[in-house]
Length: 316
Image: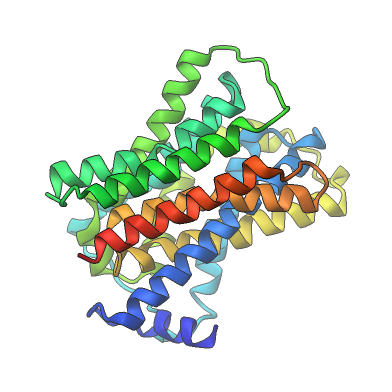
């Protein structure tokens, strides 16, 4: 683990084998956090004290505060105070709108309108959208192995999300599904379209400013729900859940994305999103809010096989 953080601090521009291994570890840790956030968020929301919109606002605000706080704590090798060129701010604003504000905002609203199974299926389309955009705009080669890997991972996610006994009333499933799909399209555009600015600045500086921009562009829409929370009535369990959501999948997880993008192709980065439902299912079993049968075991095998095939294809 110490070698991982040393590589992160040094941030060499040349992509060698060690950089690639670090990038894969970064993606694995980030997606573990993003998978675990689902059952933890469910625990917080089931209390009835915090709405989904308020939770997303607290997550972005807390993440921004952590990034600026650690600016004064971390060593200079992390490039926490890197100056952003004035000409790059428009692209930085667009990055923030895509991967933080729009991705989270559209998805949260969409989930409220559609069935949770449908929204999970929409999330699984991110690697497919990324592969198509990379082929069209970056002229990435569409090999049969890469296509097969993406489809196998997609099949695994479909098996996993379909194995559920939960049901929800869909207020407007068509609009909800379109919003969830739009959220994943925003993520795919970010993965494909902003490699230049990602390689130019340190991951810490990028995410610090992107979260700050999201506080300005997204959090105002959450203020009413955030101010309606009775913070004095929150239990220790809820506070612990909020702390985890802000520190691990938000601060740490989002910091890992640009680190991975420096060494891996967009299709590989996005393919790791298939892991999130796997870790969500595992933690759900640990918290006694779900089970793990044969179908989920097969789904897990499909997901890991799909990521392996996409990664292997990207090396050729």
